[in-house]
Image (cartoon, rainbow, N blue to C red):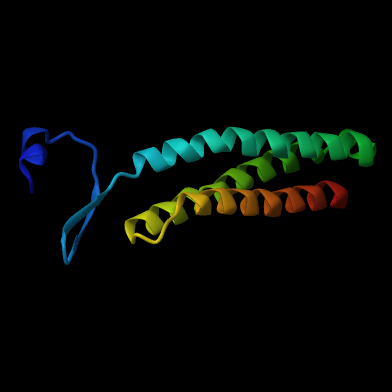
Length: 125
C-alpha cells in the first residue's frame, strides 16, 4: 500500500497487478464514463430504428397490446448487453491488450448486432 492510499482511506478502488516492472494500476472510471457517453448514441439509434420500422414497415404492431412491453424489455436487455463493451475494454486495458481503435470496432459491432436483433423483433411481432 503506498502513501496516497494511507492518506485517503475513502479513495476510489483501483485494480492492481504485480508485473515484472512493478505495480500496474488501471482506473476503470474513465472507461465507464466514455462508454456511458456512447450509450446515448446507442440508445438513440436503436430507438429510432424500432420506431421507424414500426411506423413504416409494420404499422400494425403499433396497435398490438404486446408492442410496448416487448419494446421495454428489449431496451433493458440491450442495455445489459451493452455493458459487455466496457467490461471487455476494462479487461483488455488491465492486461495491456487494448488499443483505442478497438473501442470503436467493439462499439459498432455491438450496435450492428443490436440493430439486427431489434429489427427482427419488430418484424416478428
